[in-house]
Length: 64
Image (cartoon, rainbow, N blue to C red; front, side, top):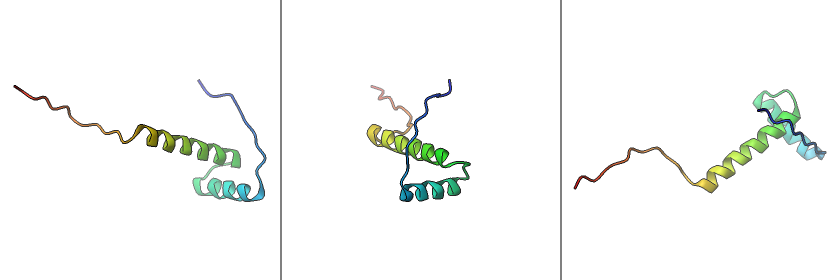
């Protein structure tokens, strides 16, 4: 199910320049997409830090 919520904000000139640079670097069409990209990236990094490192490793059983 796609997310239909939208939020808007007014960006100051410095923020607008950063969004434009991200848009260009990531090949996005709009600065709104650049802002969404940055928010999603930040959420992903924060959740990884909160959960700690997770790796898949084989489970070893002690045979007694």
